[in-house]
Amino acid sequence: MERLDKVISSQTNYSRKDVKELIKQKKVIVNNNIVFKSDLKVDESCDEIIVNNKKLNIKKNIYLILNKPKGYVSATKDNYDKTVLDFVPLEYKKRNIFPAGRLDKDTTGMMILTDDGVFAHDILAPKKHIKKIYKVTIDKEISDEMIKGFLDGIMLNDGICKMAKLEKISNNIGIVTLTEGRYHQIKRMFACFKANVIELERIGMGEMMLPKDLQLGDIRELTNEELQKISVKI
Ligand code: URA
Image (cartoon, rainbow, N blue to C red; front, top):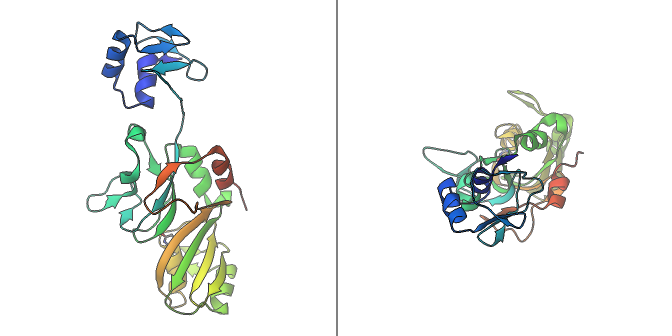
């Protein structure tokens, strides 16, 4: 059980002071009864709470998908650059939303933002084997040597990479599938073959592909079905 004013202010843009005022105006209803006290204890899992004619849809955690444009860093704060948090709508600002994983400033595509630390850990930990799929354009032809190297495991200065898949879809464009996410990993993997990454886009995680209708800079909540798809292991 939790205090009503706390529950409402954590789920809406209303401050606790606003809630007090709404209660005075008889605009807060719990289980069909007008509320008179802001410290009323409510059960978030079953009580029906109506605030200003709107039923509260209580969510323990929030899961957002962003199609990240270039120029934003995957951090909650940065002294110099814009961050992916700039895309989070106002209604979620009171939550401790953070990016689940990192994409470089110049990488675009699928980014998950959440306030659920356990979920973030689960989709990122290499042991969990969740696929991260990227479309990559490099400055030379994708060779059989690269494809074999990715599969065998490339040695980087922070250790050998897990088996990765590189599929050639045209001369210099490929699809890379990783199950880990090290700093600049794909760029460093191609650098082993003296190739530079020109464009990098994350197009999928687990079994969930970046939705076609999600334009660069668009952000929305994930559906339950999509959430399940992200967590599918290899
Ligand atoms: N690998 C990279 O080099 N950069 C990214 O943003 C993601 C994977």
